[in-house]
View 1 (cartoon, helix red, strand yellow):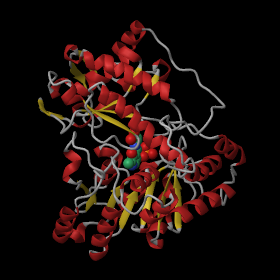
View 2 (tube, helix red, strand yellow; view 1 turned 90 degrees about the vertical axis):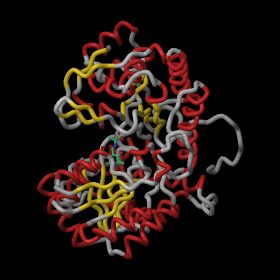
View 3 (cartoon, protein in one colour; view 1 turned 180 degrees about the vertical axis):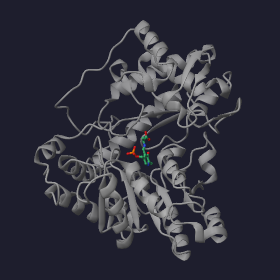
View 4 (cartoon, protein in one colour; view 1 turned 135 degrees about the horizontal axis):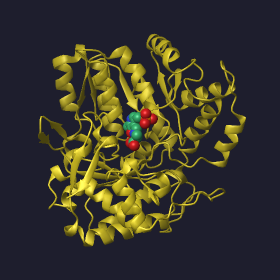
Amino acid sequence: MGRMDWAWKTIIEPFKIKSVEPLGFTTRSERETVLRDGGYNLFNVPADKVLIDLLTDSGTSAMSAEQWAGIMRGDESYAGARSFFRLQEVIRSLTGYREVIPVHQGRAAERILFQIIGGAGKTVIANSHFDTTRANVEVSGAEALDLPVAEAHQIDQPADFKGNMDTLALEAALKERGKDVPVVIMTVTNNSVGGQPVSMHNLREVSEICRHYKIPLLLDCARFAENAYFIKLREPGYAKRPVADIAREMFSYAQGCMMSAKKDALVNMGGFLALNDKELAKKAREVLIVGEGFTTYGGLAGRDLEAMAIGLQEILEEEYLSYRIRSIAYLADGLRRAQVPFIEPPGGHGVYVDAKRMLPHIPPEQYPGQALICELYRTGGIRGVEIGSLMFGRRRDGRFEPAAMELVRLAVPRRVYTQSHIDFVIEVFADLAARAASLRGLRLLEASEHLAHFTARLEPI
Ligand code: F0G
């Protein structure tokens, strides 16, 4: 709780709305046509035809009046723009890292980093790599190893910090092949296991182990503020600490970070790499100039740097974070009442519905998660994303290997939807849950070998 130290039940959005965008209302038959034309792949649905878009929380935030004012103030100088120095100052005081390198989005920071420190024979270890992080590690020739805690796999068992790393497994891995590990990464919050937070205790332990083996620790800090707020809510000793302090402590256990600013910096495009290591930063800037742009803008406009600097400060306002975390929990409460199973507890940026349990009659090779998002769209014009066998299953030589989980992520954009939008989502889900047994699976018609979910075409069975 921030300065509003009273205990009303209503979750008040801590903003009023100055500029609005119409929603895309459609009829059921229009949506049916859109689905058919798009090969039952929601990535092929024009956003105008979506009523509530929960595809991602990335780059979809509403900027504040202050950020829009910053857009006008942005300094567009090629080198040494005022907006860069402002951003650098904000990042330095938040993270403590001296070397600040702007990039156009998170995966650019990943590409630059692993181009330098990755390579064949190396192993990068993380609590869990996000997909693009894994892809950039693997493209470099290195192996990406996930070491999440065991609780991360128990979908219906709530735990406070399911985003943590298994520290015993980390010790064992470093003992065995520490010399081949260029970096350990902690993703905060841990998107791949359900937007779950990492505890300060776990960060500290991982940091001590890394120091012992002399391996740098970096944060993938796309959702650092949501993680810091969970620590405040859940970890003993942090309830009275300002979130900004908690975030600074988190950063203090690592030697650098890479950030997709499209999440917790409340901008539509942007990212950065921030480091202590001057030598590594020098190499990163060389790669940056070749592929992204000069060192003080890294593929962004000056106005983007300005908006990012402001967003990084606004995200730490406790009224905002209280609203953010409570409103995701509100969506989860509604789904729970409708008996929709999901990863417990809900994460910081969304709810991950368990399609395998909700649609037990649809086998993995008929993509229950995809069937669920298609029906969600058909019924209510709502768009979610499948994180299951369409995204992660393997199809080779006519054989099918399912993913470990069949999930549907409902990611909530920041400061975009109000409580009644969420009430609508809950209402549609309740309708769907009541007739879950009648839903049918999908047949895959065509898919590329890599990142199949973006281009796949399917048809109802
Ligand atoms: N790291 C994490 C933890 C992420 O969630 C993402 C993106 C990235 C890195 C890559 O950043 O998109 O700016 O290049 N996640 C988005 C999502 C795409 O929908 O979860 P990017």
